[in-house]
Length: 296
Ligand code: GUN
Image 1 (cartoon, rainbow, N blue to C red):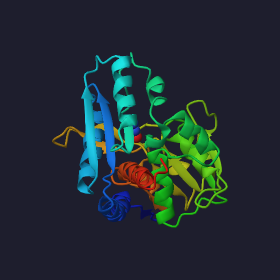
Image 2: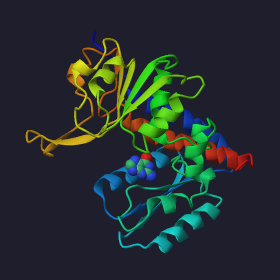
Image 3: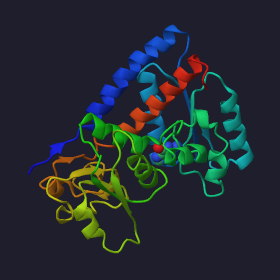
């Protein structure tokens, strides 16, 4: 079977178009959704992410502000920025781009973000409430995966989902989302990690296989059940001297061989990646709507 390619770019564009309409309504009520991003140091990937987020905001009529600080910033200075943003009524969403420099305790900063402005869904309140099935905000990448499946009519209910990777940003929250007794979830979920013994065998059981462990082309064709849905969260740079930039981007899935087995598959780039920003914007617009209705 040759898989259908899940077009995350198209879905994210659809979501952004839907958000644009909501933003126009909010603007008519005098509210401009605002997102603040805090970027510490000069990690090139973080710079790219934050710039993309700011550009995406601008494109759909949202306000964004980026707080760039040197890697030498201390905890107190970072705290002051976050607490200041919590108080600002024009800021609906706050994100502190990860990773932070080693000397900063990331969790100690995250807990200071007002959970009602935690559009990344990283605050322990939102993580805990996610387990209980009622977070204020859901973490953007897993939320984007759930939304992507929904828009392709892929229903995880009753299915065997295998997630590779137990990160706080993807694997753990995605498992929590998909086990909920809710529409678009209700799956049987297995989370595999670096200490999983019979990983290949578990992968072959999956109706929906989600790779999020950050290893280039780890999932091979013989690990995919015929007709499975394969979702690739990985973005890895591998050397390719035939290209001018000297590298190419590949996912955690060996795309060419897995697409011969899967029913649906996400490409890299253009699959899950664009969904993360779309869901971040969506969370920020939801927060702005709560501001309008004074429920924040
Ligand atoms: N670093 C990598 N992905 C993310 C993200 O989604 N949010 C934040 N804040 N940092 C990240």
